[in-house]
Image (cartoon, rainbow, N blue to C red; front, side, top):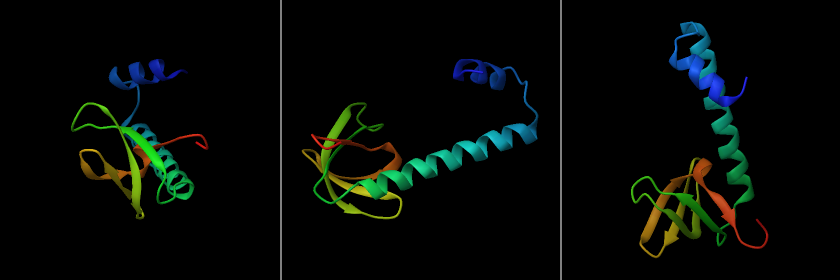
Length: 94
């Protein structure tokens, strides 16, 4: 199955409640894994970007602080606390 077929199956009600719970747990685990990998790869001073839900734009900034789940990023528009799984490292060593 590809992602389009999975989405269609979920929308059409093909899966049971237990199967949907299992899918939800798998997605949460995958997001957590991405977040941990991003946290490990980032250093203060790195340039990062993400798609901002608040502004609707792709935003770029510099890592100021790294916490367990969120990364504080300085941008031209101020500081943002961004979930680590939303960040992409940019630059020559990305």
